[in-house]
Image (cartoon, rainbow, N blue to C red):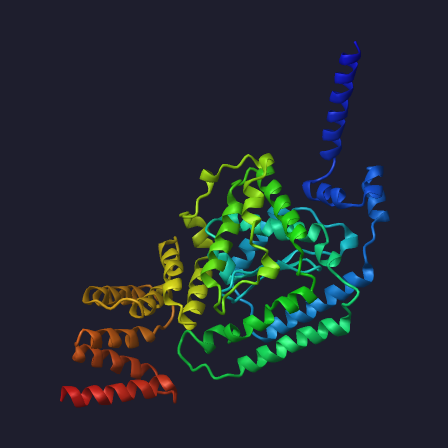
Length: 440
């Protein structure tokens, strides 16, 4: 009899616990779970809100600093502007967290994309999530992107930015740190990068500035320098959200694995990830090896063909490839260009960039003829003028010793820039003069 009563009591408590857990939304419950032990004992959401220390002063300081940083990014032409992509990202974050944050947190979800080949995603205390063209391009499915965004929303829900605030941080010290980075970045922006189509005119010149503006020192001052326990906590909440919402359970480990591979390949280069901020070591294993998720290593798929995802970010893939081409990382740009071209939407510039990248990595006669075919596709799919198709044609015809065809291509190229006193025009005229001497 006692055994039966005990079992009934256990069952009742279990049902009560389930009912209590289902009383709130996923994210509200996570916030409740993160409250202090004293606050959780009441089981009253409104009472917990009332008792919670919201750190108004620290929160306002971080909000103001984040706003200053965002203004500086805009002045440095750092943002990648694409209304369609922005709307797509807003749809995703509102699927992840459809309900507003508690009013006391002063958080309004917002998302911006920066032009940086380095895969970055981080968030500020005011609710602004920053991701990069590099991160969107590194990921290969919508589920992987959802997992990364869910992780940032977990950081915001648990107030990790405010928790990382230290007594050493003041408005003055944060502004000084940001100001130092901005000074170096703006100095880099004044360097003359030439006027070729993939450089200063198109990209702003954020390539040189990004390493300063995304430095660990600046982002830590803004509350993004999480310790390993907070990184793991956000990962695990994101993993739980993915599984609870029937998304790909392997998406987050796959995304972390891609970051690990990227870090290994980029170590020692200007595109190196900051180990202090990403804590990549053991993060993959932390998710994969937890028994509660029931994940099997064979479920990890590092090669995914997701045309819908690539179509949604097609222009972003092209832009990130352009950043890589500008940085002479031609081999790294090619896979992104192939994804852009194979999606349901592409344009001539992606083909042109592929031709540029192939010209720097392939040299056989067969390769050169293939590049000419790709340049035909660039011209046929162009939605705007692409005069650089003709400079590329000229260089390939010269490789093939087809001087007359090279001359014809250069004349067309020079005609386009005839009204400008630009380096493009002067280069074309020098080449035309040289070929006229050779062919006459």
